[in-house]
Length: 366
Image (cartoon, rainbow, N blue to C red):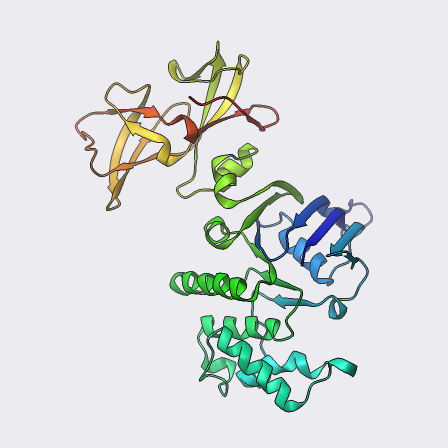
């Protein structure tokens, strides 16, 4: 099921008459293709959960329209939209068993959709098998692990085979190991069912690892939409470049003069076609190549061993980061007796941005 938001805005009134309305979602245009898992990604307060609640029908937009396929669902109540919603806190009924929790949405069906008890149990067992809950159907939520409770919540959302599955920070309450396992389960379940799924998270690693598309938001506005690797490799603006990546991107002040990029007094890269100007320069941690005669020199602090790779921790007067982290192969020894370390830069891992607009300035990499 394709999902479309057209000029969708959501405003909340200020706390008193003197305060202006809070614009949580600002004139958003977004098309979510049928059958994909899409991650809504951004920091707290960016509008991603509000967008999810607009899709679910829990909130009505202040303006704009929402379509499921060709159907205008803007004013349709949640129960008539055919959505499955999984909350951050699971919202399971503690006095009901796993089976009873999963069956619960089916008990509210009426008319031609009404099911017999046998049909409801069969559907619940079918979806329980999908999320690997067999053998746990008679347990209460308190007898389950966090990951198992999350799977019950997903099964309950899936049992009616919704047109759209909406997940609101579903992994936030899990420990690191369970987060990894459960996000893999979500990806598997989504692929098996083919249901269009929208997944809200502030964790960029989560979003990039399981999403077909990511939507990066800030202050109620969409900054960029694309495949995870494409957004990582070609950020539209400085915010996107800084938000994606672990370790984070290294941000420098630089300038372009006669088609050459300078950081400090050092000519570090060719930037053909770019006019002379002050710029922000971002270099991904994997964008450094150790070279004793390299273009960029930094003050060496330490080397952190990571196994296959090492992280060279250094600094530069024109870098905004507290410390620069350069990820290089462990096969390249760093002389810790030196106070300086020099690098060449991989052109495809370097981006430059306008100082005022913070939009990316494209240049041809050779």
